[in-house]
Image 1 (cartoon, rainbow, N blue to C red):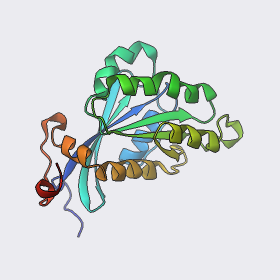
Image 2: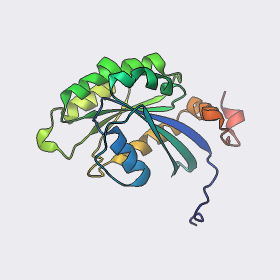
Image 3: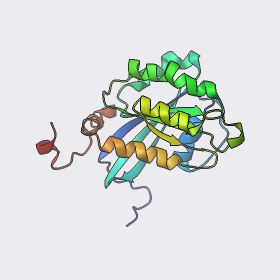
Length: 205
């Protein structure tokens, strides 16, 4: 039965998701497409943007608080604090700009290691702008190998073409739901207390 307009079920969990990557790779467009279903050619984010969405996955109601960070270096010190408490981190690159792929190892994974405070946070590499196939500089195989080498999930997307955007977020959330320590950490995110499964206290340390 559909929920009445304006009423949202109380979430079982609240997860913090962070989008990182170079400026112009499409982080804001991915977030807009997932959160609203729309697409716009967006100007680079200044500082940090934020959207929330409630999803039903794995038999659970999950509230996602998704933080879209600026890729420009001058905002780097501002965004470092937003890594704290993130259960999921999405590292985005543009398949038509090889330098944005190189930055994942040179900059973004280093920042994740430096600033993230959740030991088992789930990382996902997202290769965006696959609609620009003729301009591609980074192959699927190279992206997959990189993700595997760094213990990350991998999805290729097109925010403009609405290809696999929802799939990317859903795969990340399902992986978080499979990780007991992340379910426990969700209760303290932003001071929000998550509802705990009845059997959790007896099976999980």
